[in-house]
Amino acid sequence: MSLTMKPLEQLDAENHSHESREEVAFYVRVKARYVEIEYWYERLFASHDIGDFERDMLPDTYDGARLWASLAAGDINNARRSIDSIFPFGSTDEILGHLKKYKEEVQQSLAALVPKQVAKALLPATVPKRRGNQQKQECPGDMLERASVFFSCTSCGERALPWSKVNVHWHERHPDIHFFDDGGWPRKKLHVRFWEEGHQTVQKILAVLRFGSQTSAAHLDSLVKSGRLYCACGDPSLELPDELIWAKLVKHLHVHLEMNYAFKNTHLMVFKGRVVTWIDDHRLQDCIKCLPLHADTSTSSHRFSADAATRTRVERHLDKIVNPVCAVCRALAADVTTPSELATIAQSCLSRNADAIVYHLKAKHGRDFREEDVTSKSS
Ligand SMILES: [Zn+2]
Ligand SMILES: [Zn+2]
Ligand SMILES: [Zn+2]
Image 1 (cartoon, rainbow, N blue to C red):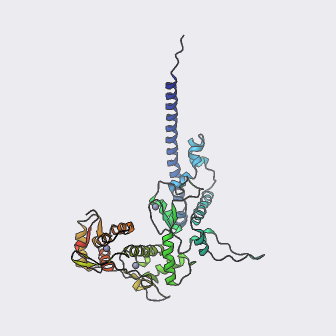
Image 2 (tube, rainbow, N blue to C red):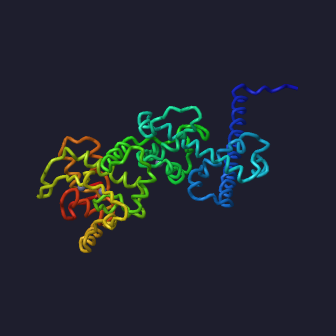
Image 3 (cartoon, rainbow, N blue to C red):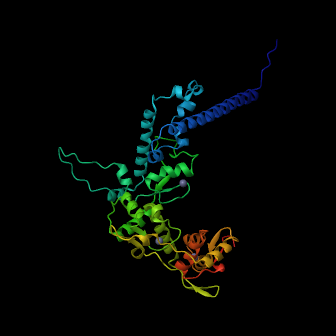
């Protein structure tokens, strides 16, 4: 009987194909297992109400399921049994206790992103410890509560995220990506950075308010919500006090300061037969107001609104435009040797809110609305 030898290339190809089939089967099984763990993880919170704030601090469904990667991929025998039968914790409380370490891990990772010099100014000067003196030690979480500590998302660019909203932002905007970008908890690297520009803006605001750099965001949140701390510009795109938080007020002021900075080198020019310019309507010492306790706070809710006829005209005009931009801003930007930042800002779309458009033209250019002032981004 003759033994037919297969050529080496064919054996190689067959082995390779066998390995590929196994890999695919493994991948499919792990994927299905994760779906099962995600479902189990969701049920955990459906059956155990821990409050919105605590839930916001914990991993989302995607990350939560991947905390127990070994249940999905580690042990081939386990991977075929039900999740409940192999779970390493006996009770829901034990599981939640374990999950709470995640919050500490997030706090530590975020605190590590704050530059050392900044961190030093945010924490009280250390008092030498005397023997027997039980001095309270500040933990990373304390520094994160300061009014000037914000983060920006390196994935989508969102800014002014207080530490407690970073996790929530990730849940909502990036639900299918690991929050820790080097694989998963308990790793250290997050998809965010310290918002240095915002920190500088807050320093300027705090200086106007005569508040120290260690002021807490919670204190300013309560002032903002009660209408005692506000921006007096009347910009309709700014939320009313009961919907506003310190972070949103900071972002509002930062965006206006950023625009002022970008337009500072523009000049008076003639646009469509009329002289136009850029007006700085956000000098911090004039627009930030902080009222004493029991003061009348009704001015904090003032928002500019156009008259009915003008609003109708703007809305009709917007019906013809997909992405509205301010033609005056574009003309001003085109008239100078343009730094790219100015060009980008001048190309930014206006809100589709008619009041906000009329406010922009009036506050920034001193003009009443005309259709020719708002054009489509592409034109
Ligand atoms: Zn993002
Ligand atoms: Zn303002
Ligand atoms: Zn403009």
